[in-house]
Length: 303
Length: 256
Image 1 (cartoon, rainbow over the protein chains, first blue to last red):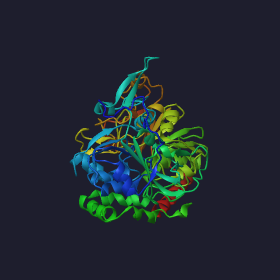
Image 2 (cartoon, rainbow over the protein chains, first blue to last red; image 1 turned 180 degrees about the horizontal axis):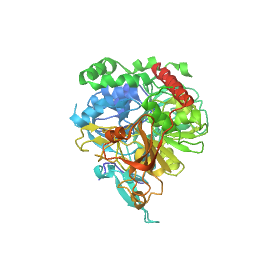
Image 3 (tube, helix red, strand yellow; image 1 turned 90 degrees about the vertical axis):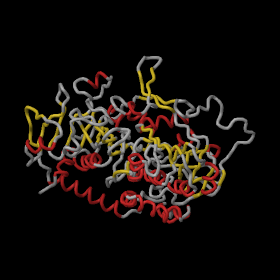
Image 4 (tube, chains in turn cyan, blue; image 1 turned 30 degrees about the vertical axis):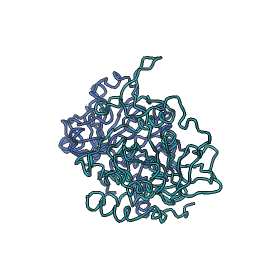
């Protein structure tokens, strides 16, 4: 059986007298409180707003045996996998965009370094639908997918469902229900409501599909200043913890704050190619640093 | 004006694109070809990237599928589930433009593994959007340099279906879309045979011989009854492509 847990017809926060609201905290505390060894963790952000600072904090706190969900593992999971945080990866495209391979992911899959990594591989359409199903409190997602493709032969979580009205068959995948979703957003107001604009990816679905949500933001403001009433707003009561980490998406980007550091993505390839170079880089830039190191990238010059 | 084989490939890939097309763009070579078409003869083409950007008009080529440039210049940006559900699966996209690591004679693509899936010799990035792009777009163009490593007799893994086993395989699986209609390489252009769906050479780029093409392909490649010469890139095409690449190089080397 798929290893997700159905919440059924209850609510995510049943029997609560008081409406729970997001807590402002440090990134260190947010990760300590919300991410446990063995958790199913989704850290989303489709090229834009990838929560790199939170990934570094999880590495520093030495989390182990995580099942990591992410459509595009990107550098954030290359680093976490290379540092031994993960037992399993659920993903749909595992490359360094525009550059080539994720070297640490490949080393784990091809050579079991630093530990064996189980993979569950999907297409983007499947992952997007699976988050959507999770947010909608459904046990599975269905879509027109994988036609003539080989992934269903190697991934037992890709199955078929028959339409009760037309008799047609469709692809089905289990909903994604993370223990915790971690995202980076543009800003939060002082009540803990969170704003995302630009390429919004699958973060709203990933947050609403999860039991807990940790959000890092570029800044905490009096007024969210959304460009449109239809901007993606996550109300305070859908978020568990918020930490202000300016620059926290770098080398990904934050629309209106700073651009994607494409040169950094290119530079990552030779760093990650060799195990010793990688470990030395991680010690210098992650283990010996803190979330404040990201502030150098988070200057508000772009706004 | 002299030009490289790679420039010839990008130019040849840009030519079939039309103003009316709604094009789902893969990153890398497909993105270069689509934006070249937009610069030259298809200024009104609608480009869609899977990050959710619809009607985007980037000034430089994005390094990733979700660079800020794509959102800044888009008509609108939607969420990723909406992109795959309403726009792609909804049948709104006329043309999908893909690259691949490996292709077979029926234009099936592999971007997943070389060797066995469970113990791969080379682990490639995987499918991303491609499996559903390949089935839901009205038709598919593929751009890939011709080589024995890339054009193989048998794929280790079918990431996205082209014409499957050939013939009417797509229809038998219930697909109403055309699948791959052209494969543009650095030496020639291939199209599926109308009956068998096997890729056949229909156009040869200037200065390339049939022997060179046969030598570079991993299966005994066939030539159509009538093979034409691909027109060489014009000065305008080359200038536009080089300008685009120069702007891109500058933009990506000084990150903000």
